[in-house]
Image 1: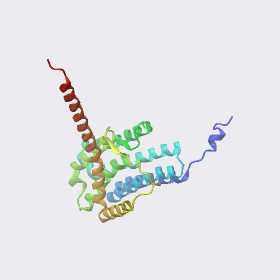
Image 2 (image 1 turned 120 degrees about the horizontal axis):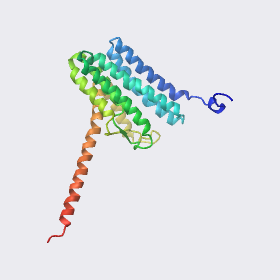
Image 3 (image 1 turned 135 degrees about the vertical axis):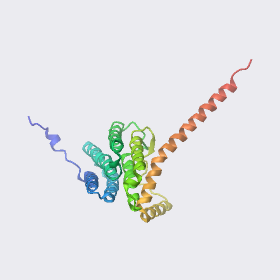
Image 4 (image 1 turned 90 degrees about the vertical axis):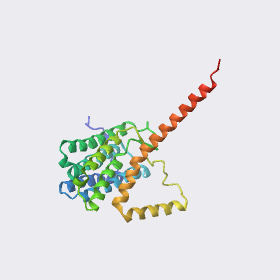
Length: 258
């Protein structure tokens, strides 16, 4: 009897989506190498490139109907490198290295948060509403870290100048990834559906806005996205509280009086 069944040996690996995943993995590894060489701006840009490539591999797989269990597992491992280890190491080398234990603990909180976030995402597939992410997505958390590095360097400052803010943002990103706060996923967007012409104009304006000052605009966008989940969470909490108070007031009013 062969060690591997014949039908399993015949199964191939889809090249196209896994090519994008490999490119994202390379970008994450490249970011680590550049951080070790103290070229932090290159490292930050590489993380953004990994984020773009990571967003393409899943959509390419769905559009070409080349999804596979191997691709899903490979994507998770690539995400751990590109959006877990790479941002933590870049931030540590850039701003947290001189903060002692607090610095590497902050970096570890982020790295552990990314690992837990990816593990929970893989186990909750089919359970959570696809329109939302449970916890801040790891690419968005990595974009927060990379965006801060990029915009600070672009303004002529160093990591030591913003070390405490960088540490707090790193911890915030790590904790947000393992929180139960819901963030819009964008998966309900149908790329095959026709849209009004105004949408095309809005996309052109968005590209023009990003290209006008990429470091600041990208950092601001992901900072707003990270805050949006908490804003929606507290708004829903306030709405539920008002409804409970309204129901309680109605019940008190309907109670028979002696």
